[in-house]
Length: 207
Image 1 (cartoon, rainbow, N blue to C red):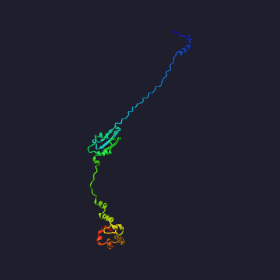
Image 2 (cartoon, helix red, strand yellow):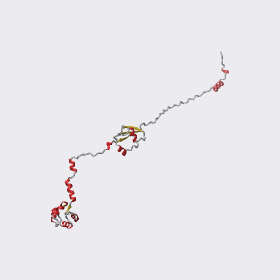
Image 3 (cartoon, rainbow, N blue to C red):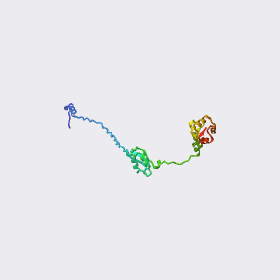
Image 4 (cartoon, rainbow, N blue to C red):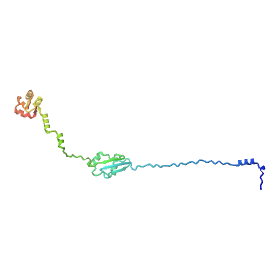
């Protein structure tokens, strides 16, 4: 049995010694960093598999819709369609279609056939109603032509009357002096004009 005499123990020095030897470790708790997982989206570059889409039809062997690279020309479309048909309008193609033209996306190409520009005169007849309206009367035309050709005995000049068959300058002047005339036969009253002379130019005169 042990007896502890508190009187022999220096309590204050013991406590002081314990305080100096005790190591208090401070535990620093660092906050956890939240790692945000960024979703990396791989952006794949879209590749246009058909940059130039063209519809070619007409006088080609295999008409249809085809895909071409940029910069392709009309001749490339013709080759893709297996070439021209035998009845293609080659003259028109050589004159009007530029086979070196660069094609645009969503464009249309038509290669004409020979028959597409074959022009011919077609015979046809108009209905009688239209003919009667549009074609002038033949007798009217003849009268107009006669009036333009004939020499008026009431208004013609001396030179015009002198040009009549069988009429000279003096007789022409007599015709002028005998004006006006009501009928052509009044010229028979003019001196120097007989029936035989009158018959020579009566078809060429008018009032």
